[in-house]
Image (cartoon, rainbow, N blue to C red; front, side):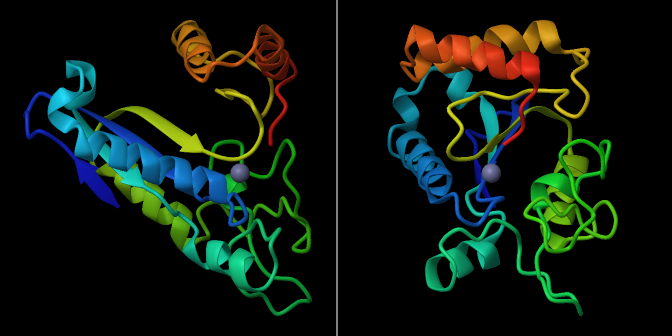
Amino acid sequence: MLKLSNGNPSNEAFLVEAGLHGREWAAVLSVLYFIEHIAWNFTKQPDYIKNKDWYIIPVVNPEGYEYSMTKNRLWRKNRRTFSGPCDGVDLNRNFDTNWGTRDSSNNICAETFCGPQPFSEQETIAIRNVLNGRRFTGYVSVHSYGSAVLFPWIFDGRPSFHRDHHVPVAKEMVMSLKYSIFNLCKYLLIFFIHENE
Ligand SMILES: [Zn+2]
């Protein structure tokens, strides 16, 4: 994990990670570009960038990432081994919030296998430890490719307590990525139907 900071003690903390899913190389490269962009031009960044403690994990799932490069280009899960015919846990579904419910599978061979229990995997434990280490005001998990900004709650469609904050931020993210009006509508549709990737 990389930390970028100007050392200001009043900085808020923000976590960015990518590579939770092995095959999503574009997400990893996007975050590496983000790091390069901030680090090389740090003094020229606006205050809302400089006055933060950026915690960045470019590859959460390095074994799955490497496996997707050498053995199976479409490998999604981590490389946890089991005694059965299949390996790997979908790290995206290994967190404890409504673990094992919507769009998760208990089938070890499924792409969306959520693991034997919440936080059964070292990768998700590592993220939990980071988040428990201090108060974070934001967390973005970068994936590819969905052309969508997703925010809670995905698992049952209820708006979270922070929906009124998430919606304008998500719209701003979409517009910053220069999406077309069509894709903006798509994002809204995805929000309302709560499609997960
Ligand atoms: Zn993903």
